[in-house]
Image (cartoon, rainbow, N blue to C red; front, side, top):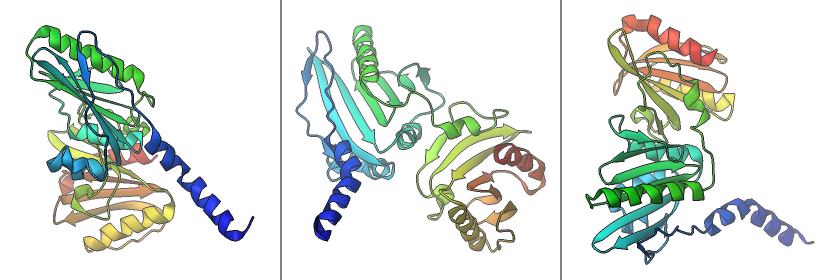
Length: 284
């Protein structure tokens, strides 16, 4: 085999996971009594703006791959089904969590779902699924729920929350307020891919961010960039704790060890004990 053919083979093998991902088909389930209308194209990163113009950039930032859409019609009643596929389970959780509220009614569908009026959204594996209807009839809402359950069974993938969410301390954590931020964490371009949970302790509401990096060098460089941004300097190459003043976010408590960074915002300077308590639980 000559060198050019060898290089081409290596390139094709490297691209194989992406090619398989793009080739996956989604067969929308039937819904008894409803006519399934599948006249929509499969939306990709190139044309998602045609479907959700104002929100497309947010979806793209969470590893959007493609979108399949169908409508189910019975007389004047229509149920719309949208299945968004993302690059992995964490990104699917991220876009799902960005659109949920702890005030919603949560239901046991997929990994987690919620309903509000004629809306039902959930995520499972790499998929974020949205169903909606304008109908007020209890029978139509029940049909929407039935369709959601069928889609959840049909879709492959993880059936558990991302592992990092289970590593946040439970004391003081506000339920169903966790999110995943793909980029621009705390408004900084150099801070990416963070899980965030909201807490309340001693009457203060604050946020904890967990950032896991691929290696210690990447972790160290991220911490150094933040310290430089806020006028500080890295004083230990193996880990440490810092308190800084961020012009965007006020007081910031930062701790890091190995490949993990923990950032806490929303606490006063004299609440160092609270920051130390939580960072120690997460890093040790």
